[in-house]
Length: 297
Image (cartoon, rainbow, N blue to C red; front, side, top):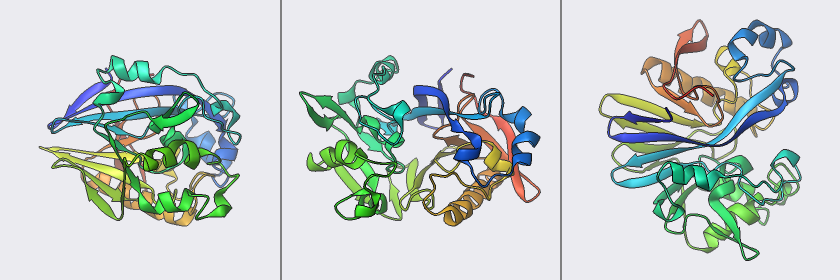
């Protein structure tokens, strides 16, 4: 099962790809070795390989709410030049076919939410057509956090050129902005009666989460708040891709505490396996209370 109902909102998982990303010690350079060993039985086989590679899913959360079709994050994308991540360079994946299997054509999408503007959350914002990058979803408004838009624009911030996001602004953000389809927001943004965007900075300056409240159901589409379940037991450790690790740690603790206290279903961007989970407090950290209802992968 890859579709659930939360109150009046239907949530569908659309996976682009799933597999090893990089060695655990490189991905999380500050996480102690004893933590990986202590929790290995909880991480294998869905989140860590036997040879210590972190497993990640690249996926979109497809939401149907108040008659609109909404995509939360758009994965890596096809045909993109990604010198910083060779495994994502010039991909040819069937993501749009998977979206159609979920009942959605590109022209059906009303809203695209980029929780932040790293390359693996914006890739399908655009597609290559006759040698030019064009919006993949021609009728959609793209919600982007202003802080990230300004941070990753190499014309505004030359320091980002040549980094992990090399070429991403030019091929996945700027064409949508030039098409007049981008809406920038700050602090918080109400999507509809059930969905609200809130700033969750640290991973990037503009990182955000989507909070769902519909009927008695609560959910948090958490973006890159977490990259591995090990960060529940070790919430004070961030990935090597976090721009401000200290702020990311504070944001993680705050939102995990809220999720634990309010029985919120947590849906991180990159978890494989059952993908979603409920968390509980465990001493000064957190633990998995139960895994969510999506099909195990």
